[in-house]
Image (tube, rainbow, N blue to C red; front, side, top):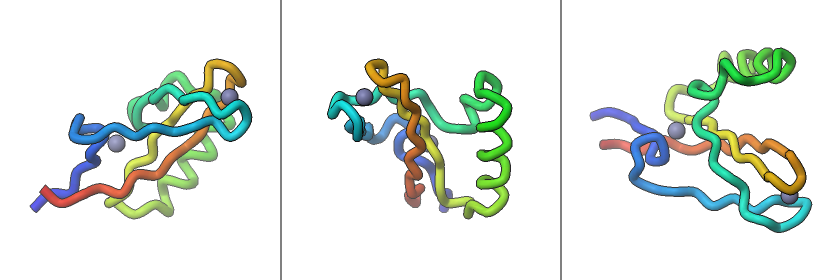
Length: 80
Ligand SMILES: [Zn+2]
Ligand SMILES: [Zn+2]
């Protein structure tokens, strides 16, 4: 049995509301897919975090176009 992220596999979508403006945030993909474009300080942050993160979690980035805020949401992977 494999653990997979339901969002990466298109099995579910996750709606995140911006805590500032209440608007719907855009899904930007998983951190590992997004890594290259990210600012150096945040990559460092994520790298540290990923070291401590268990394998059955997938961290996704959501972005608010209004506030230009990014938010990380940790998704629990599910058994297939
Ligand atoms: Zn994922
Ligand atoms: Zn916002």
